[in-house]
Image (cartoon, rainbow, N blue to C red):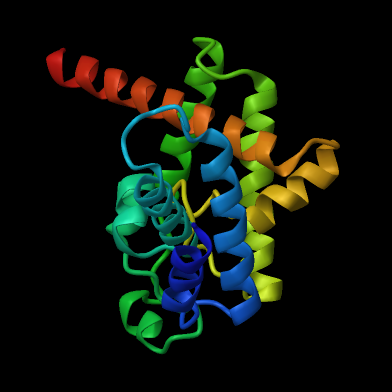
Length: 196
């Protein structure tokens, strides 16, 4: 019953990924959606499952409603190719680069560990994912347009999973939890600053 709908989804996204990758993404999303579906519900299940599959594939490829639902921040970004000539106009090579954002991020992570929002192991995971994502983009040209503001790609999660001896799904689940907790922590900190 679900095969024609899944094949249609794979065809729709084949322009954004190779045919094999589109088929693999659709098949894996279909498998997960089928496993998680409540088959005892009296409502029509097939359209519901296919809608979940479409959104999951869109989120993985970084476009459409599925991407917006999975990661609003990434959906709102406009990725630029690192080799694009406009960077020379945007970034003046003679002007010193400010490290304020990096310092602010490190302070936030340090405060989050001290406040036990995330553990030191979570911090190590976040850094490992960021490094793996950066390496994949630089060396393999792998696009970062995935969930979790570009950090949630399967390729990066697989690299880190191999290093840590864990499953890729576990890495992505821990990453989502860490980012959720950090987002709430940062929002509370910002609220306290503005209230003071």
